[in-house]
Length: 516
Ligand code: NAP
Figure 1 (tube, rainbow, N blue to C red):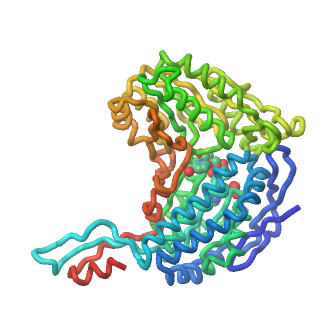
Figure 2: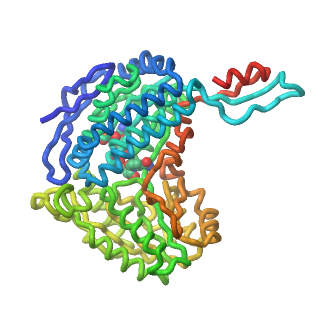
Figure 3: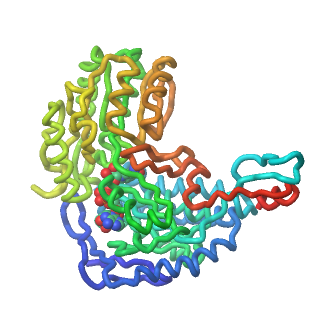
């Protein structure tokens, strides 16, 4: 069986014990094994600080941007191979694989473009200069300079390609070396991407290292110049962010965690209208793309009571068209969950939701996947539930079923009531609203805006990609339970890797200094 190696201190290195097996979630066949046991992980921090940071500091934003562009192109040359790894290890359909792999390439290219636009600059400025006294002889301007440490990137299992790329692009462009760690169970795609990146010879030495397996005590070794960017469950995030060294060293920690995203239909949207159809189409995609294993997937569907029957009927009909099975097998449109543990967790979650909800679609149990060996594979059918108690703090507002499941919540149609329901989840990555009524949309934003990181509007004639797509020009992250983090959003995404410095002095000196 293939053993996945880690790329540390300039060489590919294999762990020597405690291997974890990576499987094809459609068949449960083993694909590879991985472990970081026995590796010199602290040495990776030294290597990044001694080699990667200084090498990146020699480059301008423009030069780093050029590398990101070239890396995106290189990965695109390996697109089909990466799709296949994604199918094998993540159970991704071609569409799911594209969402992850092409999303990764697009994000690298986007940040490459931002770097090229910055050209010869070596630092960024924040806001305009301000005179501090009677004359320009005392002046202030804010500059953003790269931190001199290491960015440790810990990613979730569901987006091995995009998760790696969106974090790496921001840190690299900012000038901070990266140690990236994919979730072990689905590390195949990220491992190959890093292999391609290293083989390309594009990257300065020490600017990218890879840990496959546990990070050991790396988190405990981070200091004031380092950054921890974590994507995963709220429980792991809580355990990590409370580490004493992180608190004592004021280490930047960015967390992207669980989210019970909501989609709300406005009372103005009539059944059969184009906007109603868009709502149903978007819901079906957001529930079933990547078998619902998206942090941005819709989990709660708010529908005015008088529209509930029409939405349920239309959505159930769409969900019944979904063919669950082994990606690549004829007709299959939705794959399995990524691991046995995820399957168990999703079924447990559905059972918990069922205490205060009823099933409208799906069985609530494990399914047989089309084209999969009998009794094998981690399949769940698209599952739609309905709860009669939208304003009560039932599990629908706290239990994230990380699979193809969502719950219908009837409400009065009043935007303030919808906002109260949305806020019961205590912080989400995205809220989507479907309406052509500017007043209703404004009232929903006023009521629910502070509880969400992104407000996605579907209106007649709009051509959005759906609320599930985290695009590099828009901020990704959310308050409260969603982690409180902020990633992407153009140059905002570089923020965790930069130190804001208030420059003060004569304007004639400060402005050129800030100009980089
Ligand atoms: P997880 O169990 O928290 O694992 C996430 C990552 O943390 C994995 O790489 C895991 O490594 C690592 N990890 C676990 N314990 C660690 C420790 N003590 N020290 C260092 N690293 C540790 O989450 P998951 O099950 O992979 O991901 C699913 C969750 O992620 C869902 O709840 C989803 O909502 C969330 N998610 C959020 C976003 C977002 O952008 N907000 C995006 C995707 C997913 P191993 O695999 O080696 O255990």
